[in-house]
Length: 412
Image 1 (cartoon, rainbow, N blue to C red):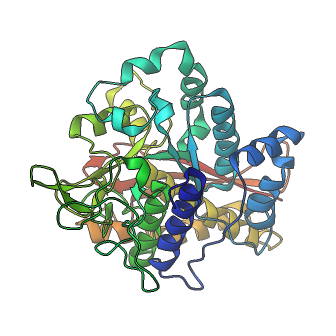
Image 2: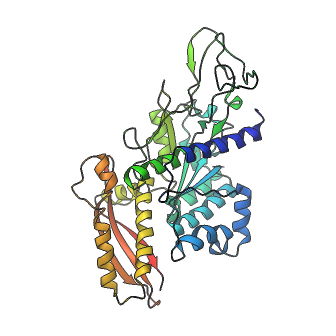
Image 3: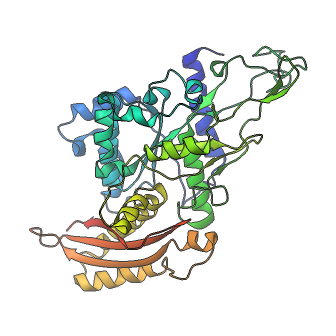
């Protein structure tokens, strides 16, 4: 039961089971699964003459978003853990390019090796990690963070407890008596280390937040914060007594993350899940993608760049890009001119724009404070257009002072 590879496999299936079981699936919300190892994905990309000639690109883009009548994917969840090694960063670059083309963010996880630790228990000792990211060992990672496609990649951490241990006071077994771990004086399972437990990738938990937000509001933007969709509830609650008789709780997010550490990790391009002490829930407080926001001499421009690198913004703008391309493509071949298509697209997006929206619920349903659509012909490609959207979304506790530009290409 505690063999490393078996534990990882069990954690993967339990994470997927939780995502599927707790999502309200139906005609408008579907989950599809594909089986690729990280090594297989990297090999697939490196063997292809170009990204858009790879089998995965064909499956995710050409067969859906790039085909009339296809249904674009909302997001890609990878049960993978990444470090700053060159091969890991190479795969992140490839997936970022695919995700950007599909306007569908890629969500995975960072492992302890990303921070030059053997495991996350060392990570919780409080030593700052930011300084280490300036070393040559992180050259590939830092270069990736500077890219535009990095905003379509999100890495969560740490792992979440997938289940309680088997036993009389854990998960009971009806067929036979079995205690998976040693027990305390009251018979409660008492792990000696995190390695004795089954952990799941936090990307599944973030994916669940997205499906729940979509069910509630029709958009995947309410996914961060304690009271705005970022609360991951009902984590396995494992408690036991120490040798001295004190009641202890096994952290269900592998390690406790302080406010200071959460801010440090967000600034480094990660999305931590923070356990609330003495509870059975954690919260995605930030919404950072892996992209390092650009800085400008204008403070407003710098602030806007930071917000446009946040996952809630990417989820909103990506869904709009899907609609603009599909609706624009459907109008091609008609007698409508570019101004007519622009008018129709503007009328569509106006229903999700409300400059006077008050409160989290209203802003989650109408996520745009301002919107403006332009349809322009692509230079040198008669009959092909670009739908250019200028968007200013609502984001909690933050405000975009100007709109952010997003382009969806409409093939002729």
